[in-house]
Image (cartoon, rainbow, N blue to C red; front, top):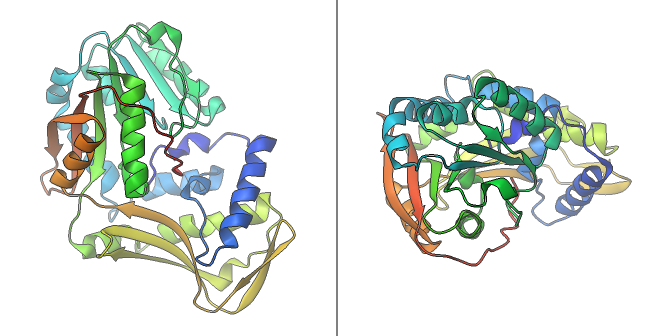
Length: 334
């Protein structure tokens, strides 16, 4: 689950982003396997629902990662160079990054996300609470090449990518992102990254099918957003949420299932659904520690350390960029 994405909660989509949403939605709903990108989950309503998800008893990722960052913060800080620039990919709510800032002597913080309005608001809050910290927000899609601010050019670099957002990428996209991050941060840089782990499918299925139905509302809100912003005509009562662990592909899949044969217009285009046909809205890949460390090595990183919660549900890894690599455009949705 993409936990940085509440960054879009209060942002107004400019025309070019609305056009991209329309183009992606119509194009993806016209495919044989209909799909919608999970990056469009996070309008204001979706972001509020996601915040509620993070507090659900069944949804373990947020609290377990926070626990690792809080309990092992001193060990993580020991790997981080002093007076470094902390670059957060997909910066959202500052709860997690504050744990790093409190334990380490960073000179600068560079939050990177597509929502400039949200970034500026978060930056102002951090400037108040960390007056000695230089904060340089960058409004950019972090999965594509972008430039770091000039003032941090000569500082050591530390990347931060929490929330197991890496699991929302297809494997080749995850590899491309890691290569891109290594190229951006430079040789010797450190990357602190959260990775959800493979576990009992019953635990995974419960996390994505909570008893209160909040995850279902979150998934269905994607159709409501299309209705609001793209002149859609989805009847939400004719769709239901389905999430399950795909053991063969080692991922949780989220779908919206059509409960009837129906036709829906989006931006004037007629989309036909068979009864039982699905819209694939998200994947969340689950790793083993060694599988992720192997993937990191292949993308130009040397694993330095990792930390687990007591139940081995979640992992936080420290990687060191071992060699300069050519930047690769990931093309991944976030």
